[in-house]
Amino acid sequence: MTFSNWLFGDIENPVINGRWGPLHILTLIICAALIVSFYFIVKHAKNKEKTKKIIVFTLTSLILFFEIASRVVYLIKKYVIFSPGMEGLSLTWIILPKPWCAIACWVLIASVYVNRRFFYNYASLSALLCALIFFSYPGVGYNNQYILFDNLYSIVTHALLLTTSITLIVLRFTEFKYRGIWKVGIAFALTYVYGLIQIYLLKTQTDPMYFMPNGDIQAGILKISYGLYLFLYIAFILIYVNAFYLVEDRRTVSALLGRIRKKER
Image (cartoon, rainbow, N blue to C red; front, side, top):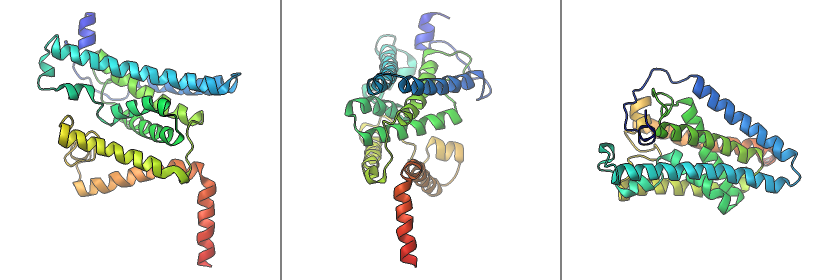
């Protein structure tokens, strides 16, 4: 295999059986080791705030590198190599982030520049959800005979999504307080608006957020009616987001429950 084969994927790369294996486990171990290491590095650092920012900026810079590199590779395949696999793909399809995992990558990158607590909350929640789903069902990257650049991109970016999102939480960039949850709700809503723009206006992705009918998850994996799927989808997102706020903002929850008990009496 030449470097060109590895980079541009112009080689037969059959899918092998099995979704869980040594590489999958090793990736998770490395992610966990990095998160623990970052915690202790910050704990023993003289300038904790500066160290925290360096760690997060380094992680998001790595995400940015792979996001740009993947697009450069696609552009070369389409406009220089004229790869048959790139026929029909527009420039906007190549450049714009999709699906949700890629969107989450760019949200994490943006978070260090927005530098607002609510945006860190939104970025970490979005990225962690994508990473958890990927590592529960690691189809792309792990199941091929060769780990080509495209496979490596998928593995590394999802590993960075997992590591960065948890690191943001562990290093206290986030603060899950109910008083600010409405901002996170708006951010998620805008993400879905972006998804609808891709579907209906730009036509670059059929379902970037996996919430439309006859999508890969609803029709391909779960094989349930769209009404039931949409109900489960909304319920899952609401439970997932609220779980972080329920755990961290226990004081607000306890106060609310106390007021409810008083009214019942």
